[in-house]
View (cartoon, rainbow, N blue to C red):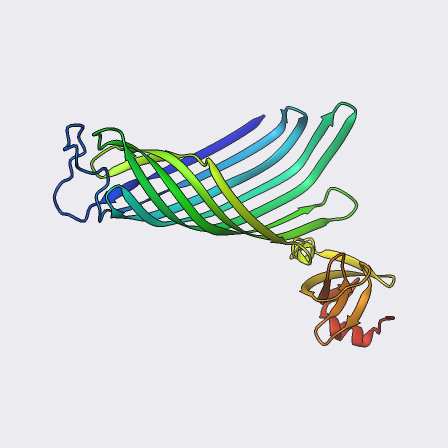
Length: 295
């Protein structure tokens, strides 16, 4: 069974003219009058909330899906007509999503896979500069097409972990992106000053880069906490930082004033805070002063 709740709020685009007089948007308007007059401010946006609950739900090759989650997004914008039928402005966006997957089975021919106890949460922040050109339908002042040229960037951070196996694995990810896009659409004025619009993305170029090295520790903090084994002893790892260094993955590179440096597949991390099995959380240099390492 699948239960989905979607709440979608369209904050109407409000056009605030620079002139005090009424602006007639009838079909019999003067042919030479613009769809959007120079000096017009427009404010608007959208807000959306959706929630889903799956109880033994099946879809295509995935069966026995037991999960719940939600998505939230808020997208305000403001624009100013720099000339008749042309506007420029800013668009902002915030999104948050969560997925708690208790179990799911994947079966393709003789291949069977299972996922269990997976959790993910993400936040995304975006800001774009927008240039818009309006293309009216004949003499109509109610309906027009438009084309947006959008340039901006976003920052996304997410935490995910999987506790379905013998070990709890987690990752904290930070993703940065730059985007250039063209979004055509349609705008309809319901009254002389309020409108709704819809658009689609037909072209876009993205450049993205992510950070995930020491983030496997951050992905499991504050719970259930990353663990490691060092010279026969088990430790909980509470805090790490990315540092310069190279060597075989897991190789101890040295002990500094701020932490223990260990080589990774690429670069190295410095463990600054840890907790020995049965002990309390301590700064790494303090712990290893009393428990010397064999380097």
